[in-house]
Image 1 (cartoon, rainbow, N blue to C red):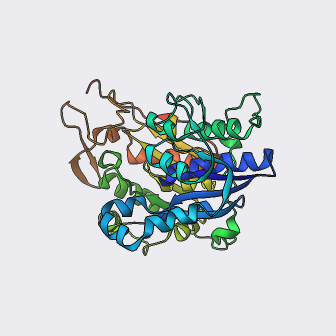
Image 2 (image 1 turned 180 degrees about the vertical axis):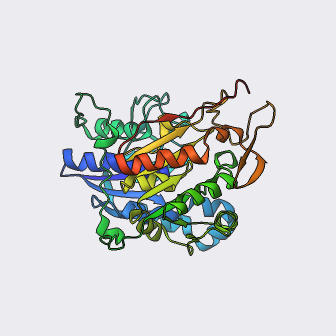
Image 3 (image 1 turned 60 degrees about the vertical axis):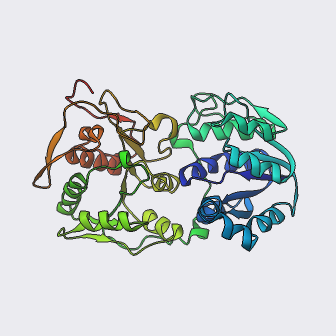
Length: 377
């Protein structure tokens, strides 16, 4: 049975799809998967051994240079590539209009979530079969549910007898050999700080990062700082400035980043796709959440812990800070500053270090609601 997966972006969404592929291949060994994915994330899709062919799409780039794209015939070439195979089933695991359109371009029966389950209900117009998937489930379990119903197999159950995975039981199925991960030989204690993210409201303040880096250096850890654009490079340099043992990495591919993360003793991340990559690689990762809700799409897997702010307006799920109270000041790295966004004032560097150390030494840890003295927004 030949199945096409349509899940084009973002990095976190793609990684959330991997456990469903692992489980589907175990339940249905006859299934052969192809996957349509944004060109920037082709590496990740190719790391799963059950994925035979990765079909890149470049919607983000095409939108910016539409006329150039049309002149070069890139969209026509993509459609021709997509139609090379007749699929027994095309699963839109994203539930957006753009992914629905791609599903309809392919040759085969299309399936996706119904209009009460999809992120964009109009996407259901492109499906031959639709399935109800509870919106209250974590993203990993939502995709598992969709795959099991579309491919007609029973979800595997956990130790409690239900189909919702426990974090310690999730299997992303990555083939480390495809990533080029080598056995660790260095005794140097290493951390990776994943400071870059998309929304301005999801950034942990630089003085907090610097204070955390000093705490790590005092315990003889080396800290690596990746970056993906000029803004992230500038932030990485600001975090590292003057702190021994803290280094800014050269620009990396996703494969290169995966190798660095896989060799680390621990990771600290904001709400970013690379945090999900760390979870898939089963590296102890402490993720810091302010405006977003980790219960629905947070890092999920072995050796994962999440700090969630208890500021009353969090999680607001907003790219623009909605806080209207008095400015919240703090002191870190020997400087006083206004914490922005204020929901991160709940995540003090000392508390973050304590939680990370506990995670690295004790393993699995639950979601932690950070203490805060703030009464109102």
